[in-house]
Image 1 (cartoon, rainbow, N blue to C red):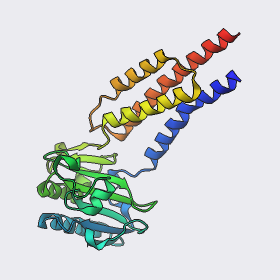
Image 2 (image 1 turned 90 degrees about the vertical axis):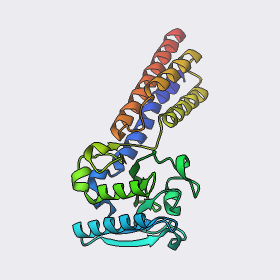
Image 3 (image 1 turned 120 degrees about the vertical axis):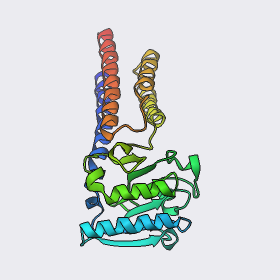
Length: 265
């Protein structure tokens, strides 16, 4: 009975790591823009957005059509879309959670969320791929701290061959119209990663009752230390981080299991 419980426990870290890996691998990255948005795109600007946002949307649409004429591109205001769920389209959402309802919705923000509440880094913009409103589709967020930075992000998309061809990530932070001003970025903070993994560890402890209190403290300490990383980490580094953490958990569980097994004998 103890052997069966231990064997099931050993598979838990690998199963969770497999889920993380599969989710990451299935996502497109910015180096493949605009191909992953084919064949149908809604470009959505906020009704409360500025003329600069509208200009950015026009430039992005023109760039896409010039590169891939077969893509169907339509520009809309956020108020024109009552319910985006179920629409079989990819989206490019321009503006910010302060001015674009659809953009706030995809980012999980209340509308309007302005300034620091928007989660957009100050004096910069983000370009990020989200899972779309409908399964199998995507939403590309082009959002700046203000409309000037949104315009810069739009320019980066327009010149994606120059700026994004080597960006094998889901998100970048943009501070200028130059390669040095474009860096990998993710809104998921290190605190969130630590919280999620700590919760998983506590769940394992409560359901198996095999690991000791000492192991719980060690594991939590390891998570706190190793997840003190910047928000500009790449998807690859986060996956490696998760792998390391669950490897530690695996060996701790294995050690306790073998000790208990030997003690039982």
